[in-house]
Amino acid sequence: MEKRDLVIRIAGQGGEGVISMGDFIAAACARVGQEVYTFKTFPAEIKGGYAMYQVRTSREPVFNPGDSFDILCALNEEAFEFNRHLLVPGTALVYDHADDGFTPVIPDGVHAYPIPMSKTAKELNSHRSKNMVALGALSVLFNIDEETLITVLTDKFESKGGNALEFNLNAFKKGKGLMDTVVKTDPWQIDDPVEPRDVLIISGNAGVGLGAIMGGLKFFSAYPITPATEIAKFVATHIPKVEGVLIQAEDEIASISQVLGASYAGKRAMTATSGPGLALMGEMLGMASMSETPVLVVDVQRGGPATGMPTKHEQSDLFLAIHGSHGDAPRIVLSVEDVNDCIHMTVEALNLAEHYQCPVILLSDGSLAFSTQTVPAPKPDAVRIVDRKRWDGLGEYKRYLQTEDGISPMADPGTPGAMHVATGLEHGPTGAPNYSASNHEAMHRKRFGKLSTVVDSFTPAQVDGDGEAEVGVIAWGSTIGVVREAIARLRREGIKVKGFYPKLMYPMPVRQYEDFARTCHKILVPEVNYQGQLSHFIRAETAINPISFTICGGIPFTPNQIMKKIKEILSCSVEHTTKLT
Ligand code: COA
Image 1 (tube, rainbow, N blue to C red):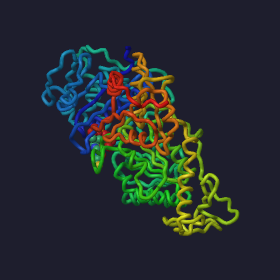
Image 2: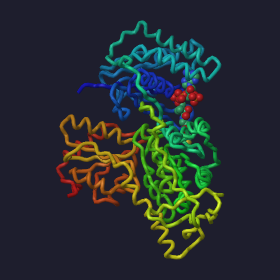
Image 3: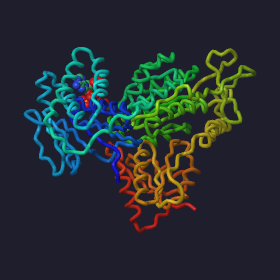
Image 4: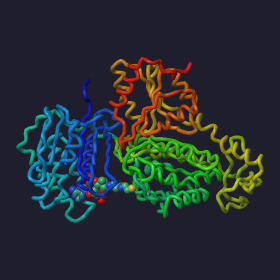
């Protein structure tokens, strides 16, 4: 099969500038018209440990970081050792060689380019610029557009002040010069520039921030936590331009409490956190359900429980997002597939919170948080903003008026004639506390009942493929992009497979799941958590009995892993009972 993409992996030690190198390459590729998808992983320490950045670039859309790399740039010996098993014949290796570098045993068939990165940076009296020496060498070897690289380097290092720009441009040029006598033996090249397109290259976290601003956000309460912090950083920079406010709270409980307060006061409000923060927010999310206050919480999932693996990828907060509450506390839970979704689903999530007057939890994940992708430039003017149902000022104001759709008109505090009791207690229609059995039951019916239209009003889950399939794959979050590619490859091999990609996780679109399952002989649910959390929900809520396939090593699936699993299922002689009739 013709290979249409190129994957470059940069690996080294945290603090050596691996992440910057990857960002520069990704930006340079995107600016010359390539599609880009990146993945980065690094340790929880500020300095030291293994850091890795993978850039996948192609003329065609790419949905995941790829199976493995074509080119490895190893900034130290540990990085080489870590990736040695992936250095198959045909791959290229660029590594730090000479006095301060290392001398690896090159596996057979690998195109090796020893570059004195550390030594050169030292000679330039600029040890931090080792990564720029490497970047200069890579630009010559693999046709990374020099002019564009210099522009992105300048943008970054000019802002650091001092002599950072001068030192780094010097190091970059020196790295290029080191290639003068090197003979290229590998076939890898980034395609020549094509007509630039109207795209952005941004991370999932920046995408959420952008979606929030486009979605009319007026208040963000921030409390930093890896891997969600960059959302607040993005919003802090841009929210003043739309006359909004960001406040840093003292902890996550204060954060969600401020969001409730701002929303009660009539403002579109949100916060972003990760699993431990979402756990702390549980009580106030119950308050939001009870008081029917619109709030959005973005949960960027990471390896847990507890501090767990804070910089690593996982999809393990689905149980917490759906059922992490005291009492019966309805909410809407959504998940995003890619950076484009991070933008548009944040807009949608704010709209749903306002329309249904309830908490909405939007699940992103550690892979998407830092992953940068090329996305079509969004059009803020085309964004649809849904406002909450507002009181018209006529008649008696009843905050929890029973209406046909269960949604009661809201009035901002201070509105003449709209005075009412606002507490976390169970209440009757006026807001006054009411503990009668019939009232509690009626209010539960109202709070849950108003969500009964969510499934029908939300865009149906996408089905990838038609007709009957031997295996149907149900995937959520960033696993969808991996499954898309696995399915496309298997189809080219003549295997009948289909995909089902839900983004509305709760309330669950049960009929859509079952309609899909009716067209498949077996259902596979791959997810990056230990328990198979979506599989549990599918078994609990639908008549489907899926095959759960889980990994939880802190990194996402690869297309190869999914393909292998599907082939294994197909070769199994035992007939699985998934098929619904
Ligand atoms: N010259 C000058 N500065 C350079 C440089 C160069 N040649 N190359 C990189 N830098 C700067 C970068 O700009 C960056 O500074 P900035 O943050 O002000 O932009 C800094 O050096 C780090 O470089 P970067 O390339 O971003 O990362 P790295 O590959 O060296 O890895 C990390 C460092 C990201 C692993 C580490 O700093 C980190 O953040 N670890 C995670 C911490 C965490 O979240 N823990 C969890 C707690 S619960």
